[in-house]
Image (cartoon, rainbow, N blue to C red; front, top):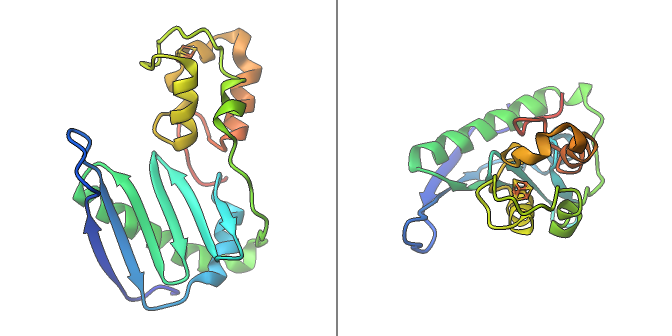
Length: 182
Ligand code: SF4
């Protein structure tokens, strides 16, 4: 097992009325930098930076960062959920490390799409069916991982099938949920 011991810290960011979110950080006793290219190969939408080294990933609207001695998750709705997320990430690291002989490590940095690139593939009707004022607001939130692609119900119409597939690929999501590569 790669990670056997860690200290867990849970905190809230500076007060934002009505928008309190939680963060959890696991401070590790072990250097996990060697597992990062294996996670990069298996986690859809992960961004690996070999120079730092660090790997960032968005999962279910949460922001996740793996560093040599630290795993952090932010933008979680409550304290218990933040603890559960970080514990799940530790299990993920350990499982990936145990399977490393079966995985081709990926040392490349995969760029995230920009809001404009995403916007250009949306229906651009500003119909508000997603609950956002405009398609561009939705694109911004999509890139930040704060909304899911399926919230754009207009995009589910048959004439947008190609754009939907392109967006799912660009954002590295499995409709309807974000998850590890199969
Ligand atoms: S539902 Fe889709 S098309 Fe309508 S405003 Fe939202 S992003 Fe734009």
